[in-house]
Length: 158
Image (cartoon, rainbow, N blue to C red; front, top):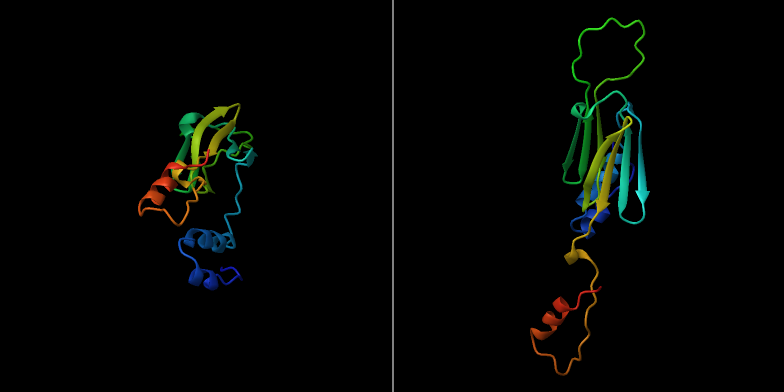
């Protein structure tokens, strides 16, 4: 299923935004209807995030977290137990996979399992060379070729 939005005009006039357009097109596709286990995504300030997944009944050995470029994959599967005869089996301990699309420069800084909740701490860390910088303005009369480029490199914004 494709979205009703035609992105072709944007492809003609932009370079390097393919990932964004692909995300927008893929968001219109139906996702898996199984939302188990439930989870929350929380934002703290400008650059910190937390994903909390309810994984009651699973241990650290039953969980796997993989950070790929722009993708966080959380998988869980209850390790094999001995054969039990259940009189009532209401706990949903089935395998699961959650995939979270991450923005550029978002990294996992911590993951903890506490009281049946898996907490994954994320932080957006923009590299120094990508942060805004102040550009020195020189006069046009006395500029030596090469000198102005040195000024730009040496005058980073604080």
